[in-house]
Image (cartoon, rainbow, N blue to C red):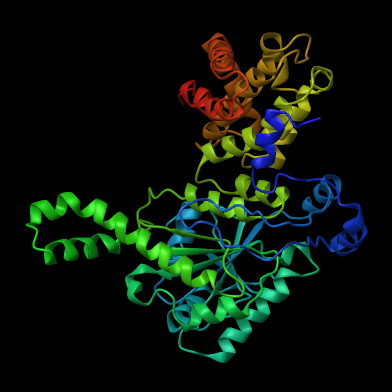
Length: 463
């Protein structure tokens, strides 16, 4: 039987194929007794699109993956780049803070940050040191000072750390992603001997490398200079500067991608970041690229639920990974769905997952929703399934934003949100919107997939 439209859409997502591979299952499981996940080497993706992989990759089967992922509670990232690449600023934006991180040695002992900051400015420190921001302790960062000066010792230390942490026996010590920062303030030397050495000699295995072209804002000045050099007046140059800046950025993205593509171990993706010095900078794109570059859904879930840059990203992946696969179920299989299980899967993509799931277990969500969205607690149609999921996601989103105010526990935030939802009489609007979506798109699964987040956004409850 040919796969249905929902199955086709699900399988089009990065790393959607989770079928068990019996011929390698035992070998992977043996390595995974400490959480090891075998995978193909990184492949370069389009510089202007989120990463996805077309190359085969081996994975733990879902049950084993869930078991070993329980042992991972923090997402670990190695940040590499030359001095003044804007690395610390990016980490502060990702963790939504202006404070300096707390620093711990490889054994978990806290280090005097003043001493480390002094070492950082001089370009020397231990790559094993862990940088953790109080605003989001779910992230652990390691910093590799630039080795552009040609120090063989620095490069060898970095390479040894990458190799050791990529296959570390302890899940807690593994790095899950690498951000390689290249500042566009040096756009005339974006790819130096240091970058070529790294991408030709450093095999990161299943740990994806994302190249970040930082400080892309500088291209605005370059654009103005080129336009003025072409003889334009200042007013006319200012009008055309944005378009010229975009042209320059595309040129440099293509240049870096084309150069690194030729290396033995090219990056998984290349993207630009700018305005990271602004507290309102949006890190959603960086989180999307990194999430899509990961080769296990468990790690993707860990990253999405750890990041606090975008609640919309949590909703996007909850729809993509938890809801879409179930929309293609037969009526018989859909009627077997347990509403609590659906709610847990949706909520697992949100921050504070452990606490959230405990609250859901206390039966705070379903009773007020089932009477509207289901038939005796069952989903007779895909439309009823989507309606219930949309209501849940609206409630989870609002409860999280409520929680961010810092005056309530997760349980209290969810309880208050449920009461507010019930009083708002939002369900008729949701039901009507979902029905209209199915009528408009029919079997156009892509259309439905794109419409669901819009319905959630349009019915968002105010704080």
